[in-house]
Length: 499
Image (cartoon, rainbow, N blue to C red; front, side):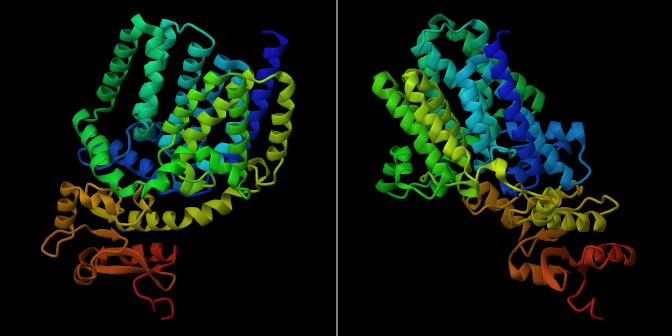
């Protein structure tokens, strides 16, 4: 290994150490329903519930399968460690992929890692999300395609097999990237020609093995994650409400130039300017804009971060890699412009490595309430009786490891899912006044007539909580269980503490 490579790997090590420090500090920050959905459903699959058959989800299976295996391996004892372990595992996933990208693309890979590793935190790149799983294989695939077309690098048979694995991760992680993936592979197919069969067979074998190991039904997977998404979810959740929205999407990176109060937008301006200048020296790079266009079909503003912007993560990663690759096409003496520009932005106080975060405080703010309700449910069902719960809010983590069964096929009920006839019928039956055996627990708002007739609300800190307990179960709570519940502020009536 020459001195240049040693220096590259040394810089990589420093970057990942800094990122690990941020990851640890942020390991209990920003509670997010999507992440908790993945973790809670994974727990149910470990208990034997069949994903896409007994449990409904429109998300792809990689996040559930990997979380299920992680929970089997580590068996976190509480919610604090559950979230922390998942985010640590996501850091390791990113570390491995970053090492692969650095090994494959050398200096271009290092520039990408340096920038992406610190910007990903604004877009939840450290959370257990589909976008977090898809970004790294997308960048690798994109980089190989660029080298094949611009550097005339031949793609070996072994790498084609690896690209098929990358595609498997993208396909079963993030549906919105499929158009981008199709275009990328179209250009790769033109280059590999006779080796097309190798790619196709590899992908089929990997996919077949996955469904065999996971025991997921391919037919139910297609209905829940493809058909339901295109027929029900996309029309209902689409960000496009007129021609202006389509124009904003088409010219998305240009919008960053007109946004001065967003650090993320300033970084996008940096990356996109570098790309445009490179296009001046090598006009063929212009057609890469089509890839950027296909990589983002959900976020309309470059200032969107966190809950509003996490869908932008794959686009951001691909934009950064496009910028990193484009720098090769710019005269070296002009690099100082982007170096100074990048340093100014990287030294901004809002960068993640300048954040001061206390994980214990973050846990208290984001997850302690979940832990209290989780404790209450475990206490009431301490004998592990067959009981059911329906969570009607996005706080689904309260049911993790409670041994309660889901009352409906929906682990959490989103409004658009009521458009699906099967799910609406299932929900209407469960919450019907005529149902002789409604779920023992309901968390969240529901028909007041039903709760008044069959349920008793559990109070907490002199306020009615969102947890409703079926009256026959409520009456069976023992004095010992009430003593335990009171340690977390729960009581049967609002005046109990005062009496």
